[in-house]
Image (cartoon, rainbow, N blue to C red; front, side, top):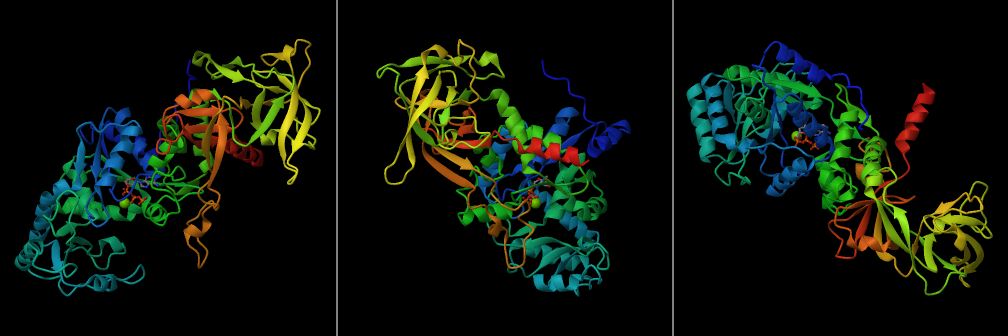
Length: 567
Ligand code: ATP
Ligand code: MG
C-alpha cells in the first residue's frame, strides 16, 4: 500500500488557475506550453519548468504544447531539437500533436509587424546597435529618441519590406516598437523587434534574412496557440509590460504571463551558455557527461524520471530566487533507487583474501536476497570459493576504536556466506603494502549465522576472485567545489571552481558474475557501497562500465537534522 500523503497546499500559480476557472476567464480552459530555445541541452532547471507546465495541464485536464522558440539561428541546431524532445519524453510527458516552432509563425509575425507599422506603433531605425544602446539611457537616465522615430507609415512600410527583401546589410537597420524612451522600464524604450541577419535557419533555410526578437515572438506565439497561462521565470517580470503591450496594440487574444523563481542548484551551474562552455573546452566529456546537470547527463548517471519529478515537486514554487542544495536531488534519487535497484556485491578497491581451510577446488552457490525492501524481487545465487576479494577499507592492521570490520585475529561475517577470521597479513616486501589476507572460515556458519549464537559486529561484502567480472567504475562527485560557482571573485571565472576530483576512474573493480548480463542503463545497489548504473555509451557486451549514481550517505537527512536542531 502506498503511504497516504497529505495533499500539499496549492502554490500561487495553481491558486491563480483555480480563480480563473471559477470566473470562467478562459471558458474553463487550461493550456500551457514549454518553450525551449534549441540552443543547448535541457538541464534540471528546465525539468522544473517541464514538470510545472505539463503537470498543470495533466492535473486540470488541460493541454500543454511543446514549442521551440527558434528565433536566433546563429546559436540553434537540430541536434538540440532532437535532444530536447527526447528529454521531455523521457521525463514522462507527451505533447501529443502539439509540437510547434516559433519559426512556423514567421510569416504571421511579419504581418503583425506590418500592422504595428500601419498603426504608427513601429518604425524602421537606422541607428547602429551601439548607437541604439547609447540612446537607450540607463536606469537613472531617460533615453533619447531616435532621429528615425518619426518616419511616415509609408516610408516605414517601404523600408521594412525592403529589409525583408534583402536590400540592406546585416545590422544596418532594425524595426523598433514605438513606445516610450523615457519609460522607467528599459524594456519599453522602443525595443527592437526585427533585425537583419543573414544566417540560415535550421528550419526555414535562407528564406528569411530578418528575424523577430524574443519578446515580440513569444507573446504572439502564445496568443496564436491560445495559451491561457504563460509560465516563465522571474527574469521576465520586467518584460511583462512589453508582452502585454504587443498583444494590446494588436488587439489579439491575450494569455497571461505569470513568473516563478527559477531553480538554482548548489555545486553546479544552470545556464546553457556556461554548460556549453564546459563541453567545448573539454572540462567534461560532452553534454551527457554524468557530472552535468543536463537531463541527458542525469539520465546517463542513472537518475530516474520519477526521482527528478519528485524533486521538482518537493522544491515547490516560489516568487523569490533561492538556491536548492544538490543534496536534496541526491536524496530523491536514493529514495527512488532504494525501492527499485537490485542489490549485488561489488568490490571497488580489491584486497585478496585466501581462506586457508576452504577446499581448493570447491565452489558453493550461496543464496542472496535481491532487495530486502521488496521480497518480490526474489533471490539469486552467488559463487563462493577459496580466494575472494574484499574492500581494502574493510581491513585495518591497526584498527581504531570503533572499527568493527576485519583486523588481525578478528572474526567478521561475509554477507550471505560464512564467518571468517584473519590469521595472517601478507605484505609487499618493498612497499610494505598489504597485498593479501590469510583467513580461516567456520563451516558451521553457512548463511551467515553461528549455531552457538556467537556474534560478530562486522558484515562485509565480497566476490569470488575466480568468478568475478572485472569492470571499470567511474566515481562522480560535485562538478564544482563551491556551492555557488557563479559568485566569482575578481580575476576568476566560474571554471576556477571546478572540482578536479569530480571524476575518479577505478579499474579493475570486481563484481558478481551475474552482471555480465546487465544491460545499458540498468541500475544496481552495490551493497554497502552505493548505486551504480551501466553506462549506456561506453559499456560493451559482457564488459559493463559502471557510473556511480549516488553514494549511500544521505547528506540531505543530515542537513535536515542540523536545521531542526538550530530551530
Ligand atoms: P538558460 O538560462 O539555461 O540558457 P533559458 O531560460 O535561456 O535557460 P530556454 O530554452 O529559454 O532556456 O528555457 C525554456 C523554459 O525553461 C523557459 O520557460 C525558462 O523560463 C525555463 N527555465 C530555464 N531555466 C530554468 C530554471 N533554472 N528553472 C526553472 N525554469 C527554467
Ligand atoms: Mg531563454
